[in-house]
Image (cartoon, rainbow, N blue to C red):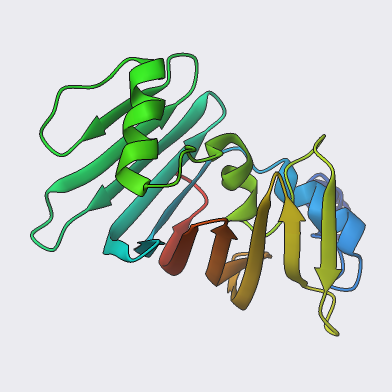
Length: 194
């Protein structure tokens, strides 16, 4: 009798765990789960092409519920660009001190040569493979029910490869383009418990 009671208690304890992830073919449920993901770290590389100019570097994106911190580093590891998007948007370019929000946007526009900054608030969703919620988007799914591409906020995002990260399927290679600007991102690692 004690064995049976212990078995029942352990089974009941197992029922209290998190619900299993959405089925791979249930895109709306997976989209909702990924849009709710509010803390992660992405490590990888980024190549930026703006007109005939461009640069590449290491990429570290730390996302928290209160904002994004993006660092693009050069070949020797020094910061080329540091962006903190949250209550007080801050951008630092190279060794310059952080710039105020309006100055930061103008500096990014000049650096990228596009006349516009980066939509970091939307991009934080794009890099995990979903459109930003509450903003109109056109989605195209692949035959295996993964997001193949999306158009949102004047940008086109194409997903070339995914990888399993824990119970989730996250992008490992993507390209984001808008008029005069292209960003290619290759992910070397995801951390979902930063």
